[in-house]
Image (cartoon, one colour):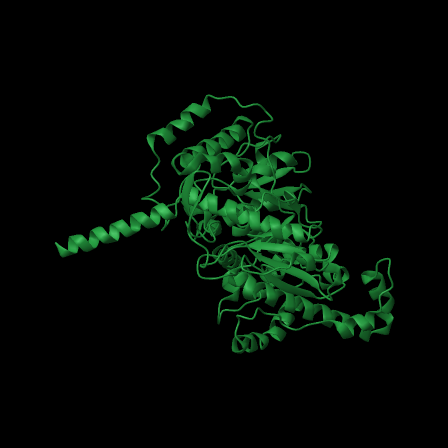
Length: 541
């Protein structure tokens, strides 16, 4: 009897937690936090608003750019400067506009995520140190003084030696990071700076845009700001990276009532969207924000199901990529997110509906490219949904999406579909398909055709396939040689890192996963071992 009572208490507590973390509560919390983000953005209207992927993308209807800083790179005793997430486009943007506002949020218990507390400050410090080293090298050679001025000067005359002397390379961390932790991080700065300088990053390009050093500032809902004393960002002796933590901390009441509905506030509600969003994206949410908020807790799920399915049908009717939405069960979800009979009937209802061509026009939450050409290699990377916008520029497509898509090309040999899934689903999916991908790329690139590699996100699998193609078929200078240089050099992880930095220079949204990068390295190592064995056998005969 006692065991049954304990179990019933446990089940009751889990049921309450599921109710607190419902879809409506998440969306209502995001909407509430977005008003704070809008207020902060209004204090510096000339600075671009940037979302730290993926959580930050939920907290405003419009962003000028995105960045990707992981909290794990700032975890205690796990500090890291990642060359696979250089975010150099952010440094360029901040230099051009005089700073930027970066939006992210965190779950209950913290005012700021570790990405803001440590990852971004480490990144800014390493970039500042690399720029100072670059200035020192340029100033040390009197023959390059003229080149330096031409690269960095604009309409104004800049005293380079004064700029070098005043360049701040200090590590600026928030006050809640202990002095002992800061001291340990500082011991790694030189190592990380050398890593940045050696990985092939174009330091001169972002050094030319940054006329002052980067420095982070932190703003949360607990920050006290005197509205009559807001400084102009140009008055600071540094380029500000204003880190805006969107969520309220524990001191704020969790139970709230507004618009006639009672709801429970969730800090960092935009995190782990697969477990709660039910196929809803930030773009779709902001297109229908008012109707979703007004729907209330009871009708919210049905509204989201209708919106998601309507968007899918709209895309499908126009021949665009539109996968069926699957729901991922999560810790805070209801049992496996069961869909009611009412929601399941939406699919059949909408499939028979024709939508006006303008009713579902796409709204982009940030001004980004859709197709990224990797220098002069004739290779591009993109999402599957954007292949249709590139029919004039692309001559062949390598589709790495798990779902097939029909593209209009003159011959079947101009497209290849390889159903590759993420390493979390299948640890060997990518490595199994890479031989076919390389053969297809070699066949088309040798004929001078332009190749587009695409996947669902355009950030992971397609980037890893492009990485394998560039290493296997191109030399160090980026010239196609059909694999000659690959067979005569030993590929290391460092070589992979340099090529990945080259890709990220053009594909600023690239976010390859560690599991897929391991598969690429495994494939390249295996190919080189096979080539060595074959060459040895040939010599023996």
